[in-house]
Length: 362
View 1: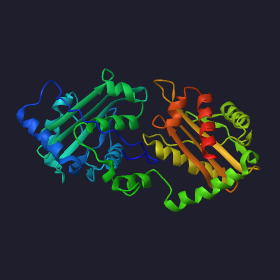
View 2 (view 1 turned 90 degrees about the vertical axis):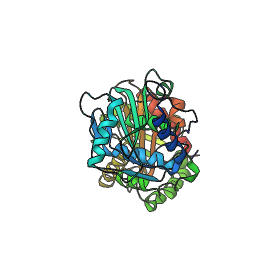
View 3 (view 1 turned 60 degrees about the horizontal axis):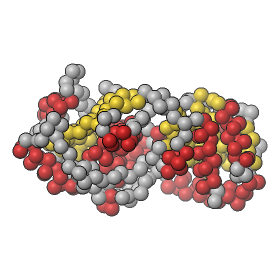
C-alpha cells in the first residue's frame, strides 16, 4: 500500500465481491461488472461532480481522483458538466438519468462514477456510489449507512472521510495497485489539487527544513510567542494560554501568550488542505507585518464536528521572526498521533500539538 501523502491517506484494497443492491445482478449486469474487474487499474473512468447535501461539487471529484491515482489508476477524467439527479428519483434509478446526461455530454472514458454524500455539518448519514458504462447501463452500485460495518468504522463526519469510504468500497471491485501510482505530487490530479490547495512548491517546502533544524538546535531555549488559538473560527485566548503552559511544562521551548489577537476568517469549504495553507499564509503575512519580540511565533487552528462535538482537524503553524515557515502541521483522524490522543476538547488538541512538536524536535 502506498504511504500517505501530505494531502490524504492511502486506501485499503479489499478483495471481497460486492452483491448488487436488492439482490444478485442479472447476467448482463454481471458481465459488465466482470469486465470492470478485468480492466483493473487500466480502467478509464470519468468522475462526475460529487453531490454533497444536494449540491454538486467538482472539487470533491478531484479529491476522489487523487485517491484513485494513489492506488494506481491513471486513465481518469473529471467534467465540469454537472449531472443533477432529478428530485424524487431513487438512487437505484439514477442510471436512467445518467444515460440521458451522457447523451448530451458524451464522455471519453469507458465508465463514469457518480457519488452522493447525504448529510452535512451535522454528520453524514449515507455514502452512495455507482458506476455506469458509456451507454449509461449500471455496472456497480453501493450504498453505505450507519447499519454497515465499513460506515461504522469510518464514521464519516466530513467530505474527506466520505471520499475515503467510497474509494475503499470501490476497491472491492477494482484491484488497486498503489505500486503503479505516479510519484507523489506528480499525478495529474494530485498536481492539480496541490496547486488549488495553495500547497507551496518544492522550493518553498525544501526551504522549511533548514529552518526546522535551527529550531531543533535552539532546543528548550527557543523563545516562542503563542497566539490565541483559532477554535471553530473564533479567537480563543484561554486555549492559547493553556497551549503555552503545556509547551513550557514539556520543556520544549520558552513559550508565552501573545497580547495581540490575529483575526483570520478562512473561507469555508470541504478542502482541509486548502484551509491549512490559507491559514498558514495569513499567519505568515501577519508575522511579517507584526514581527514578534521572540525568535518564533506559533498559531493553532482547531475545528470541531457539530455532530460528535469532537475535534476533526488540528493544525498549527510556526514562523520565525521574519515570517518564514518553520513548521506547518496537518492532523486529522487519518493520522496516528491524532488517533492516539483522539481529541475531544481544546486541551486535547493542545496535547496533540505538544505531541507533534516533540516529534519535530527530536
